[in-house]
Amino acid sequence: MKLGAIEAGGTKFVCGITDENGHILERVSFPTETPELTLQKVYNFFKNKNVEAIGVGSFGPIDPNPNSETYGYITQTPKKYWSNFNLIGELQRNLNVPMAFDTDVNAAALGEATWGIAKGLENCLYLTIGTGIGGGILVSGNLVHGMLHPEMGHILTRRHPEDTYKGKCPFHKDCFEGLASGPAIEERWGVKAYELSNEHKAWEFEAYYIAQALVNYILTISPEKIILGGGVMKQLQLFPLIRKNVKELLNNYVQTKEILKNIDEYIVPPKLGDNAGLLGCIALAITL
Image (cartoon, rainbow, N blue to C red; front, top):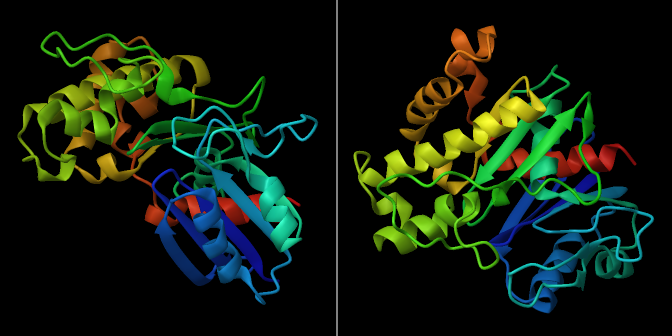
């Protein structure tokens, strides 16, 4: 069986083909441009590949409700040209195969739970911190949806006492994404995140905001594993800082071995690396 995956990110699209066991047979990526230019590259990739189903994980916000009139749409996004775009409708019209649809971060959470570091767990959280911040949640083996889907990058956090940056989010200014995304780091400090030294003050701020968010998620969702991906989290010096801040903020309120003894194995990078989202889309396709 050949299955297809489309990881539709705000910065780049990743397309792939695997077998039913998640073994990648082909993979390609290209920048996210206008819908017309970007989707033409998608169609070219899948032409004559004879995949049986495709899983699509998209940047958001999206409408994942199959009963909604705007199912399959990317809705009110700040991404230029993509607001209120019928992504699944256009893909179906040109590729004509069954498709599963969810957020890119929900797909990544499912990928890690199926083949990655959360395999065997029924509850996990995948958070990506990069161009934007988003979270995917698996609870009792099911991806979380509701009125819409989790928008975990837009929660409110307490400002670091030394941080005077106004915030990057076009909707909320200093929400979590507005203070801790890659573009926020770049605008605040004047250089891209990867150009900053490991000892730069930026990482103290970053760990402060990420840890606050994780404490909120721990106290509301109670995940068995927290996976932190995305471009910013390639700065591996962040992980010990985040873990330390999480323990300090919880202040022994949560008395579990994951927090008290095994936090290094609780807050972790993705095992699937940059293929978490792609393989999560395959896991979505398998559900069809």
